[in-house]
Length: 381
Image 1 (cartoon, rainbow, N blue to C red):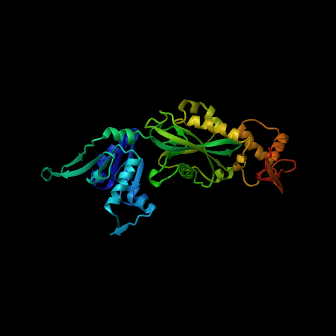
Image 2: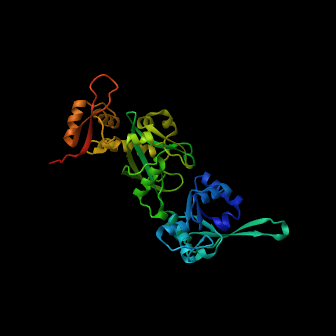
Image 3: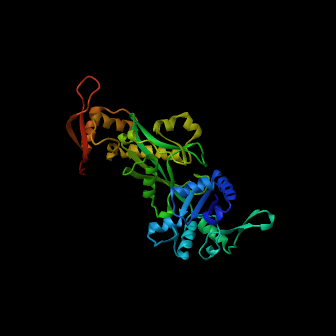
């Protein structure tokens, strides 16, 4: 996979036609385009780059925003950020090295002092005697030890997270899927996920929490690591190791929160997990990457964990009925449970408090009492 770095000012904005076409072709064919700029990252700037200059990109890095996050002192002159050139240029160099950029295009020749990444210096020449015809020139420096660089840097795998977000909807265990808007697997359903933000020193747990919030708008949810997947061909773009997480979402939160759609997804939707496993449309199209295996492993994990962990209560409100709690177990285990035996089993494991309040009954008979979970009972061996 090609990973191209493009500086905005003096490069992309000097020849937007060239770089819009180049970046579009790369992204459409599953490669990465990294936009690097000294300007502060804002929605307005990203809109200008994407819609005015016409650039397609998969990653965005602002040296100013990066240094503001880590506390570097930045001076503003006439509204423009200024800092020591060494600090400024090293930030770009370190970013390119961390992401394994195949080639970085810039309008400066100072990067040879800091870069281990191959780079090209871009010059926009205008001939005065030909009516203003513009010529784009790339000067490519020679690297004396390219083979060592490729072995050590470019062959390092990328790292991502994938999230199985679960909730109980209409009595069935559902998971959240996104329909991919970009290659690879364009138009296919997939688990929400993405690459970790190395430039922000983001760890796996933080990346997983960020992706959940991006797709659901929710935070402070139950989240746990499932497994790491590293098959060589799991991602057609490059070698990617992904750590899968699962999150359990209270059903009431799902009812009041619509899934979020962004520029990388055509659609975001809840699906019953049994439909994902058995529906012919999913069997035909398949889930993207190895996500079908992740969903299968998640289902097995929940079924095993249910026997010794109070995860079922994560799906419910603070107060609930015995029938509602049993429905969580039945949805995960995919079988009916005897009410009396179920109640006896739960009471042997957990402290359950019977409340005076009762649920309004829509049918004849005595309305069921509310109960609440107060903790795990001590187990003595």
